Length: 314
Image (cartoon, rainbow, N blue to C red; front, side, top):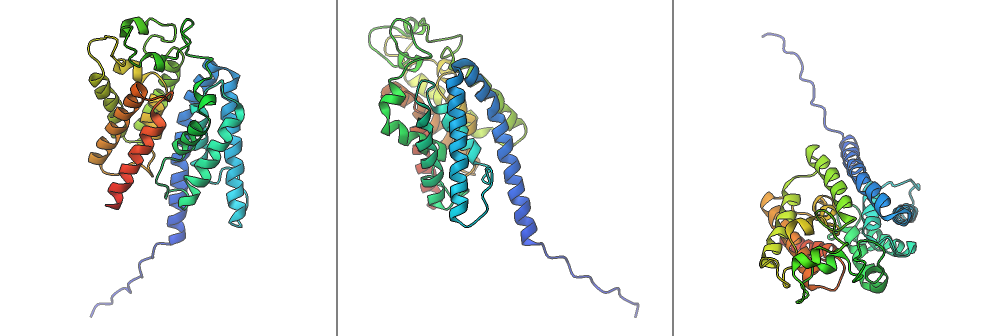
């Protein structure tokens, strides 16, 4: 019989190596997302001034402090943003806060986002709700005057109303008359259209790198357009704005590319992603048109998170 070479046992995969690669892959993805947010942060600081930069710095500082607190309670060594998703959460909260709001307003939002919306559910990858939107929604409900009554940017010089407020049907002025306000720019809200443009550029970078799929962003914008069609009757006093005006006002592009695409709280199947994104976009415009809050992003995303989690459980 010919001599057979002894079989070498197949090397079993090292679970520690696999875990390290997964963590490193997640970390790389999160830092790409953080980098993609930089253009929107720069645009916000340029347009809204040093106050906006202050919100971003305070939010990041609070996030680092909370991260270190969590690590110490677990008996681990404190580290600078051990959780790579924390800077994203902090930047989204900082970008959501009005420039005229007090700087401390982002601190409780970051605390709620990281401790209640994420750690209480078991940490990164286990949360049911988008942490940034959960934190921002809490301060929006807790401090409505500070977040809805302060007006320093995107305001009509005559009426004192913001662009999103002017898009609400008022029963007296046509959409063309309301759109002639100084609160509007070329496409949307005077200052926010530049921030939305920067967020769009960062979002397209993530899509091009295949870090974010295109289904949810397109679905969100499509849902906003569908809602605008529902609330649009040719531009009368009951019209609630055009799709372009809504897409470049408020936090629309942040919602489409950075918030709704959260891999933990968004559906995994393409069909569900379409429904998820369309629901968010539709609800954003409905809340803007009929609600009393300055923007509908936070509540629209949280409502969609509820239905997405119920579908996963079902």
